[in-house]
Length: 230
Image 1 (cartoon, rainbow, N blue to C red):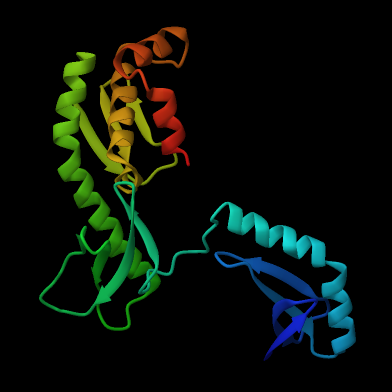
Image 2 (image 1 turned 120 degrees about the vertical axis):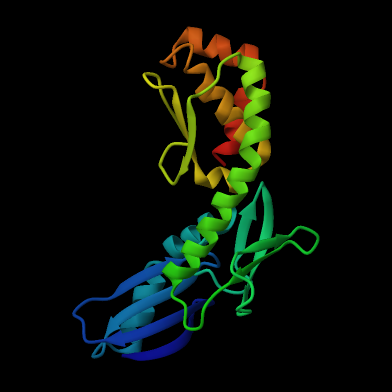
């Protein structure tokens, strides 16, 4: 595979010539990098025409990525952006064998991630996941106590796991599960989700009665929900 850099129609192109039959184009977050894969036998003129014909689409995709701050797949590397309780942090990898767990410096807005030599992306992700889990375990008890006083209901158990929904309540046994990724959001979001799930101990569905409960126990729940889903 041969890699080249070209400027076509004022657009920077990363070109990969490969043993393939057709040309392909990808616009990658977070900076809208343009990558083109082309057959080895295709001429420069054909590649230029290919880009020119798709210029408007390329610019549209780059603007979409920029306007929506779309990020690429996480690689858990130095300088990468991560979030903790609604604030942006930069990741810093450290190899100090005496440090076993990730930790955050709020003043410097840095999350330090201790990693073994030649660590994989999956291993670094695992270490950060455990950091978020530990943060949730610290944050939940006082917020849960506050919310139980507000709603007047208590769960039989609270679990933390990575899941699609922000929270889940099993009405039958009163068990509540909270999404691990709430540790990335503003703490008010954790409070909202806990109140939401506690209200399900009174009203299981999301009908009018449930919404009245949310209006009563969390008056700003609609605003907080928007913040949570941003």
